Length: 365
Image (cartoon, rainbow, N blue to C red; front, side, top):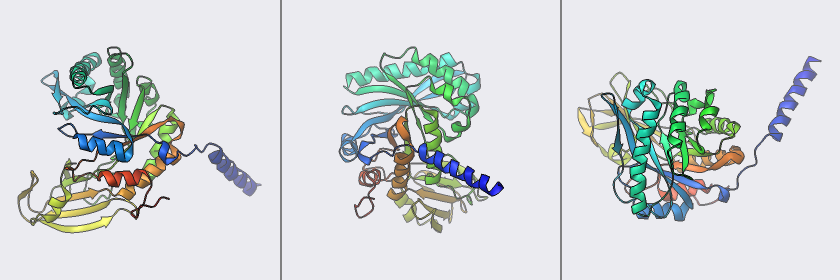
């Protein structure tokens, strides 16, 4: 009887999974968007490549930071140059470290007013440049325990936005465990959970990639269960982790040229490995003497760990999204927009092949 009960229970679980399995998305029906996250507005040619190669429909542009200094909120403009005018544009505002550290003592209405003021200035500028601004997105990385405060900020912000403008937020993987998340998401039109960078390797001996296909599947299932429209945020960039002589993390940078690091005679390659057969590559370099690499000062014995994505790792993540996201999926949003002068990101061709589920020989699977 016990064995029969176990068999029936296993069968019931299998049937439930089959019946509740979402309909997979065809490759050509998944809308594509990009985050642009540099100090200059993207070049027209780079936006054109994203549109032509990936049929990109939207661009989430880092437009400014909200800061908190000496008890006052301020806005730090983040982008210079003309705004793109041939694609739907969402202006994104993130928080400085000082603002995040003081979120518990900042009035929610004051924070909403500061964000709204920054957006209104940029919105007027965009209108003069004929940019098609359709939304505002917040990328504040609120600690999970403060999601209730974030909800009040979003509610206050929405009241002063132009009619028809889309309000969205990025989301941390850690939020998925919060009972407050559903209520917070009622204040936005959609959200963009980031299925990467969930855990920083705090020590040099920790092997944690930027993105892991197994984590993507777990996060995408959690996002689907919430029933809120979302873009799936996927990674296509490298990061560099700087560790001291004791192996403790000092700094993270996402804009260093892997080739400059490789060719630096002061850096000795001490480890090279792939996280798995379809994942990112990890390179560890030790400084032979005190020196500077691309503006990063290092002491002798300190270590740089370079985590480099592959088109195959992005391909696997995109395939997982299409398979498990379900009807709430609005599209895939890639961090970040490929640019001809950004060696820390996959190229436009690599991103296009990955999102089209093509292998290195151009075939599909």
